[in-house]
Length: 171
Image: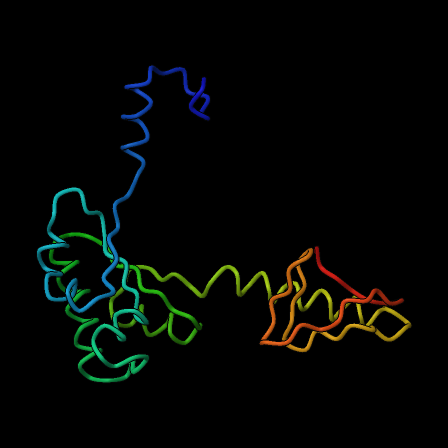
């Protein structure tokens, strides 16, 4: 159909269909957005508000100080304004404990952690499990480094990548 979708609709009908399926969720992660949160949340077409606590705390001059009463009041203000407008809130939570706190504060949903963190952790777990199963010692130790194809993501040092028996790479 040329639109990547198998509906038997005209272009106008396809656009209308997808427009009904799209949510508009602005992010509140600056002091400026916080100052206008009641107006933003009440805008027609806005479905909810996503709260970015790291950027918001930085913008408020209290980087990462999530327990600061002023920051907590800001979160409560966002949730209250958004719910008053009949909409939902989503808060980024990097840990299970932060997710529980987000729900306790009245948020409707949480964005838990970062997908890349989970992929890296899963890859590291798989490599460790494979290394344990190998009878030979792994020549390349992933001390803070993960190798993807030809790219090395590390904490500042580039290990030599001379292939050795028993070496493990993730491609």
